[in-house]
Length: 262
Image (tube, rainbow, N blue to C red):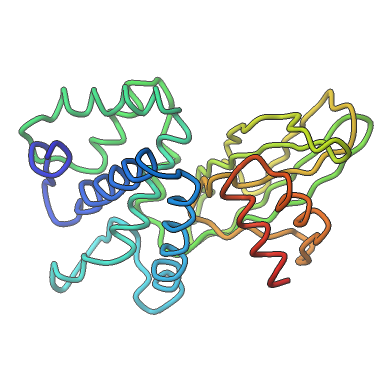
């Protein structure tokens, strides 16, 4: 097993390196063999039921803990499930091709070695030229981050404001996958685009739009966060629209769930 035996962990603190990566690879294989959207929905439901609950309780810990009483304490939903979400975010940020380059460099450098999470991050960064130093905060931050959003459309421009809150002293690097659907025709006018949320509050502008749009946010559940409107109230009309017309399978399902429970 390339990611479990040929390249292993230097110490128990790095357990998420191989277990999170292995869980991610298993999820990707299952998605390739079946429906990607259905597989993603099942994985996120499990993450929310077990790992989010762990993050909200007294056992909350980062995916790479800095201490332990017994190594048995490391076999948690956070180390495994959230660990796989961190790996998935690498792929979201770097693209499938960039992630593959990072994996190739990782194996080239470390085949037959015992390594750390930092070695994995360095391989991903060096292979793609992307600065991932801020992204490294995910390894030491416990709890589930909250991202709130607000939108304003005027004269062909949509301004999307995102605000993050977490247990980290500094803002995390959070990939937010977004698409835009025309409010009248239902056509996707902006295909899935990954926004790099790296500040506490950040504005993103979409210009040149021919009419008002409905944003589809956090497509594919691109980051293990809780997403909510800044107003605190869900737009039921927008949820119904997305449940009927969104091109992203996960968000289509998510919108229906929120609409049913709102």
